Image (cartoon, rainbow, N blue to C red; front, side, top):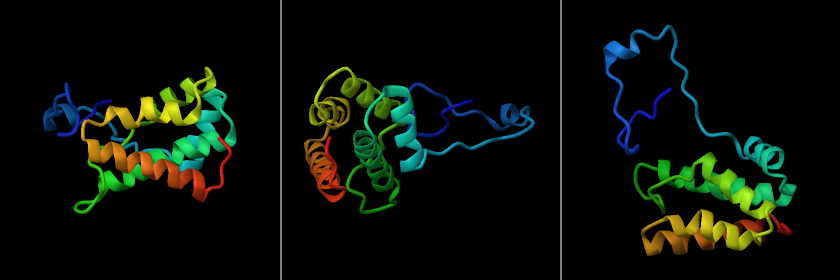
Length: 131
């Protein structure tokens, strides 16, 4: 496996000669919101509402980051990060604080942090979740 592309720090692009040695190439994308929520429940022991909120916020960041122009943020939240947030919630940290520490505060840009925090509140209200 490899994290190939300009968006990955500390990795190098695999050249064509090396890629040709593989018998097959499998591209893996992010999980759907439903599948990521299931993963969060299974691995972290969070509630369905908590899992939906985390997965929905992560999905939103991925869709925004994928827009060629006009996206609200530049960087998507990785599944690994979603799991960190789920673990914090399972260990007793209130959901909003876990999202703040695990996702929002990881962005350098103040406007990104503000936008993501607003989106989190919108998700909670829109899904009528009790987290």
